[in-house]
Image (cartoon, rainbow, N blue to C red; front, top):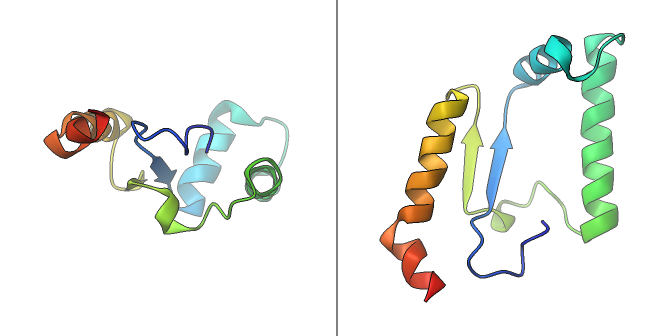
Length: 96
């Protein structure tokens, strides 16, 4: 959202299932709280922040060039995919 007005920015949304996100939270992001509490709190805060700060609905697919489902990919694979997209001729032509 910070770079939405920059024509050379590649807008990527990273999604994952509730189970995957809760698993990641439990692994270290939020400790001492039940996983479901953590999940709801993070999602609520993210959506509220995006709406407040940027006046956008983060679920609007038109905001993104790529959507990556992390249930399907490792972090390394996802990073490779973003780099490949950023290096694509179509994206590079847009920079000129």
